[in-house]
Image (tube, rainbow, N blue to C red; front, side):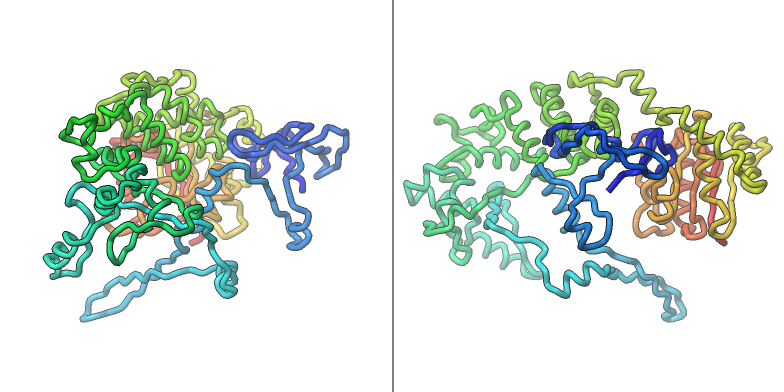
Length: 548
């Protein structure tokens, strides 16, 4: 399997973005296979002089895509197969396997009592591969260990489940039944041997009898047990209770947990400080270490921001340097340079802590380098690539395509006001194959060669892939699902995404005939809001296209 070729051999390849291959080809020659920090392998690629000719270009081992010969032969297809070398892959597997089935909204219009109503049915969409998997009853996953989740709650704050109208009965019943935690207190009071274990160590030596609500001595299976406590809110007192339960052994009551060296403290937080559990940022390192095993980069950035604003660690810079590689994984995955990825992550973090009146400087974190900030403001990449592309395509335009392009460029040359000579809203109609996408991509190259920021989107993901840097309208404008008459986009003017949308001068929106009117209304309101401009769509130049 050979990639491309792309790069200088084929700058128009689908994998090229801003003049760089998003798949990072060609690879480097390598005498040995080496595992990297992020779990990716640098495969052995020998510089043995062997080349083949692909599309008129000579390619060598640097262009070979990792594959499995058996799979390629069995399925008669190109299949990229990579070795997985990191435990981090597990969280991505579970994210996709267990996020739920694909859904489709079906609109059913009926007339009841002379009123027309819209009834949305939540339907499950089953693809052919999933149907085959279900028919043959293949398992989704296997478990080698029993996962025991321990309850964590403040005194008289355990969860109580009840049917409507039976609240008092449920409360009385809960008062007579022990939880994992209160049963542990009683176990320590009754059995001396149990006092040598912390709360999270007990399940390895005892089994919880759900019927009688008490811990009993474990007879077997301790090597096949994994224990965890439920996650709790970082801002609440229960967080410090959970922290104490990880370290204190043999406690017989909640008061016992708050008693340190004979002194009973009023709160669990004070007890944690007295034990030294919050010194040197140990707990925050443990919290982030736990998060990187199961959470996505965006969630880790949010957690780090919460720790900064609500807990004020002693050395925020050390925490950032220790965990920043995990906070920028998503940016690196999309081929963003490391330095720019760090700057982007810091922007995200600052946007969160700004809500508490804080800045990066308050925590001694790196501030934006002005040069890098300018690069982030204008992501045009290598301008020469766009200049060359525009010069190559311009002579190929037919008269209609050229008229569209000239009208758009003329509108971009004017500021939005009541005396505009040119319209700022356009629709390009034409059947499939007439060159609408060709015109879009020319405009992208032409505008970026002039340092004009352009955003491209389509109503469906498949159509978006035909546009350079294309995405869906839901992704670009953060449209809700479903879209109603009162729906608004999930973007605020001062957010990073709001800032990006404000800097865009030209929006290219394909498949316009499929866009619901409520979606267009929400986009119009959003652009007017973030641009502080009451002209339609905030005064932005809009080119829509599609088949009418």
